[in-house]
Length: 170
Image (cartoon, rainbow, N blue to C red; front, side):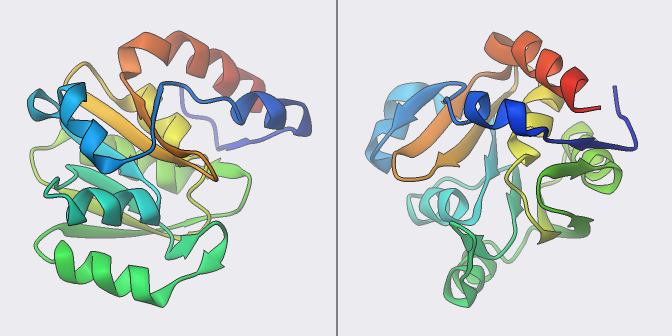
């Protein structure tokens, strides 16, 4: 499905503010979601550090060293210290897009057996769409919903909706 890149049109912004899965406000709620039998894909620095601080190591994490668009070197350092043994991939991804480079690296990371952290130069917000589309029934995608909490997505439940959105973004 990959295009050269996906670009978010203004008309989809409102729709993308709606969560694609269950909202959790506290990390303790993760225990009730059956995360043990799935590989976790985390999108966002705050989500990733929250998972790591609570003993959950994402199989794949996507970070950009920012929380709510503010550069956070303290969070970046905490993620690096808490998850030092992970393979790292560096990609460029402009705001409001899913670049070909980001898509291809997410796809490659998900197809392997090793843990990865994709470090984005730019913005990782829309990486959740790519992660949901590229993930299968063995993954659980968790991304941040600013001001609300974390959204936990079983990709198989919303893949058709994400595909439709991505088609509009090509």
